[in-house]
Amino acid sequence: MLKILKKIILASNNPGKIREIQSLLDELNIEILPQALFTNEEAEETGQTFLENALIKARHAARLGGLPAIADDSGLEVDALGGAPGVFSARYAGVGVGDQENNAKLLRELAGVEDDKRSARFRCVMVYVRDAEDTDPIVADAAWEGRILRKTRGKNGFGYDPLFFVPEQGCASAELPPEVKNRLSHRGQALRVLARNLHFGKD
Image (cartoon, rainbow, N blue to C red; front, side, top):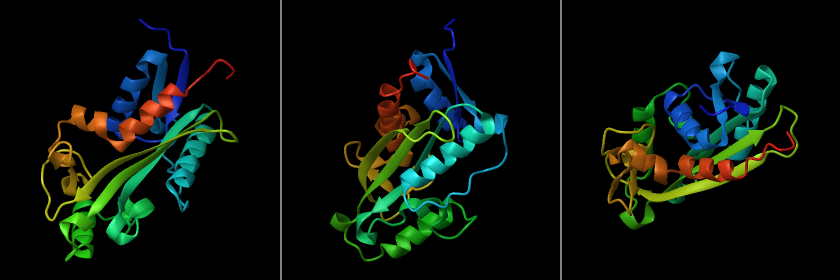
């Protein structure tokens, strides 16, 4: 059994995200701890960029848990909408609404837009902070290119996955097996970059 060299709080309680991040960090002998072990208080995401929100969440978790923390902020950027919904992806159709309402609003906003103008990307910014006051966080930024379909497809994933067409796979993100999505996705890409840059010799 590997000796755990580092414990890091993940500023999320999403079981799928915890499993994904833990699997990629196992070889570094890192144990990921969900934020709920330390607090039920969610950070208020007041940033105007993915980076600002990721840092807010990571510093919040580090402050309340007393350990280093990882956090990410991600969303969908649609070129025909000037990059919207962007940082407002989770609440595009309003605060507290679900995926179905957000997807329905996106389709309404893109009504009449030709297929070749429906380019989009999922973007993820992931950060690691050593403590809540860390002024030199490790940052990883990744994007997953695709386009927006005219109707939903697939049952896997969440959020805008049923509307996000992945050209190299010839299907929607929601039609991909989880292991394929994790390999290709913006979050998977960002996490792998972050993992390559984690060094604990001076921590």
